[in-house]
Image (cartoon, rainbow, N blue to C red):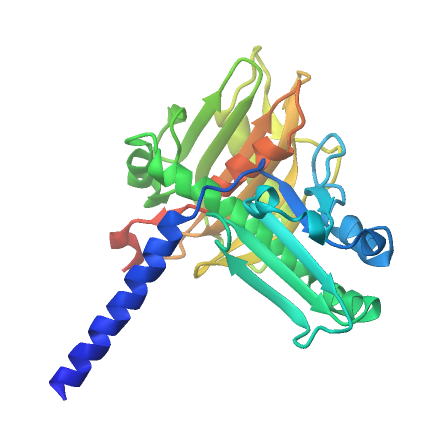
Length: 332
């Protein structure tokens, strides 16, 4: 019996090793962040299927001051889907053919390159494809968004700015990971400001906390913004005396409730501005309870890039929020 178990263990190890070697041999993905290659017949791309894909995947990215698509799409006909396109970071393959025997939507990683996201839609007709897409589109978008996010997190951990994660975690009991180039602008017992600044761009993460009151409206938008404005006024000054960061009333912020890797949080999106000045941009924050439930912890990402489109910059720094991890002693 022991010999049989040992044989199975060796076999399983061989399969794992083969899979790892195969993955190691894959080339790195190509393409820019936020791009999706759609492999589809031209007639379908120009018809209702293509229109539906564009309406959803290239719709306006929420809470950006300029109109920018959620994803930049490029269509490729199946006969032109060569190795050049197969190694792209995000692929949506749409196969509509009466000979399809297994209709449905599949989600795979690292098929022709790594780290790659591949969605395959198979249907026997345009009508069937539309039904699949209408049902699966939220999942398709989430799958690709998570793949984009995971690439940022992987690089943040691989090339992290040594000491930043630990410095923030020492204050809050947990922290995101910060890639090379980020530095501490300010940190105290209740607030941290970590930024990556260039001549024309500023990507930053703020972390702060305040006592939880236990009320039902704790994570409602008005309460989240009230505390945000109070804390940022005290901790994020503008360039001139009497100026400070606050929440813009250009648009009402939105709050959604999310569960990610066992952690529940309220995600708030809106615009920030500097009171008394003309600076502003988008922000997104995650609000959640401390492990003992006595405090609300907020991790917030914001971008200032007046000369550039902001989708890419915001997606980069927002992804870092999802890398947040409690220290082990906090999660026990």
